Length: 216
Image (cartoon, rainbow, N blue to C red; front, side, top):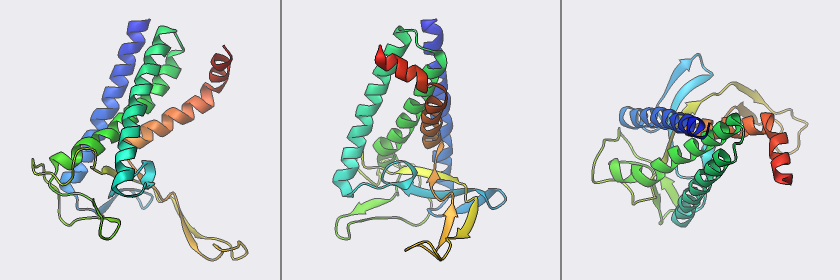
């Protein structure tokens, strides 16, 4: 059983990483920053953005914040690997182990971007200390040993966009009343999706198991 679930976990992680990186590299080398095309109508699109921060475009301040985030990701990956090994040894439910494996795959997928993309592509979004902002670039990126940023300073490639519904906040809502809004606004990638699916699956199907194991 231990070897069986271990290989299932490895295969699942490998599939997600391969799909994630193939799509990211294709987008990076075939689309200019900000390019966009439709997958299904107007509500499912490929929209190329680069994210120097956390999942779904959340930012952390400057170069120091970027390094801190990368170190945190490495520590989180190591902790999740240790946790999966302990789950396999304790013969935890296979479904729960695979959910945690999804989270690990997503973390590794985005860590690859941060660690390596600045080294292997010639252009990318970079932090400008003078302005205090990350600035984009024009044209299409190419694989190059010159790189655009140092180790752990690369940006995550995001492209999945689902602008499902546009509307206007009712005028009676304080502050934001009358302003337009978009649901769902964040742009993300396969790695982000794996983390989200893993977390929600644990909450939906394994919350009681977590509570019980916590008591033990």
